[in-house]
Length: 503
Image (cartoon, rainbow, N blue to C red; front, side):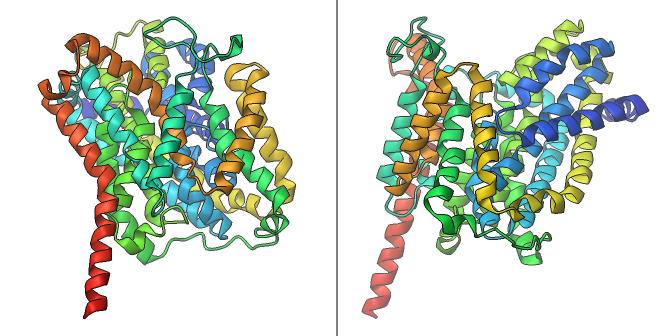
């Protein structure tokens, strides 16, 4: 390992590779700030540039920098305008945007930057230490385990529901799963629930749904409620630093979710999205009743948890890619294609045949996180000044990014019609006090849940896989615990209050 680290240091600390990681981080951060343009699209665009470099280690360092830079910067649009451009930053908006509306945009961006840096750093260290062993563990996960993992992810609905709203959250989750079934699937090459519309054969775009649920309703609310547009107008951007008390709140959260996020990222098919949702759900469920009330209203823990988890998961996703040659997500699949185009075959022999690539990328990840922190922290006061603009002036920009992001996703006008329809529906649901986050969770995990469930059923010839596979059974039990924990805790509180009233 020490020899590998020395090799990685020698590869990453060349002037050329330092420029590559810096360039990748800048590009990724800028793209991540724009809703609708995620890391997959920009990495795909940059593959010809990376291949033209000729050096596999430099090419992968550049593309990896773009990857985690986009995730790092993706929190900005989620926090400032409630427009998560990629799935892994959706959970960031739950507490990040309420903080910005309270005049704490600078503080929210600082917390996000520090949490992202810490998560990425933890991930890089764990990647160095456990990559070979974790690759073997990841191979034990099959369709049954992935199905159970999706169920655990869906059990997070209890964390996104307010008190007494678990039923509503469940309904919204089912609605999200129903939307995920639109179009063709990997198992059945036939369109479903498309209404004869050809543009729906590929399904509903995530970007369209995310924008319809979060960004578009915000613009509509500003029109419906003029006082909403005046809240941030003329407000001075201040409070960029976090207090000692807030730092103490962040330390255990960031530590736990960095480790948890990394191990979730190791599993092919899990990725940063599930890591961020589970991170948020876990921290809310283990928080005290007083702290639970702050979640969704600008909680420091609620913002730090998903930001540290998704960045650690991004680093963890390189474990199956580099050690097994298995892409764990769409983004790492593109990275795999880039490596193959450069005549490099990821797998168990990569550490032996091309140690400068394996260890160079790992060391560059830590350097990239340092560079991202240096780049982003000084820019926070300037980025946060966007909030000083009266919100009624922001309506055209919100609408532009919303429409652009939706159209770019599928390149057809049907997405714009879906955006309008779903956006109006989202406004009605919010006015009726229905939580929208579970709907997006159900949509994101729905297709993966269906595909893995069908494969597990086919392999086991029935439901026997639940009892035959211990890991699957344990994960399903965990999901039940996550669902019922809030209600159990609420009942305990009620009993304590009754006892106190009696005495």
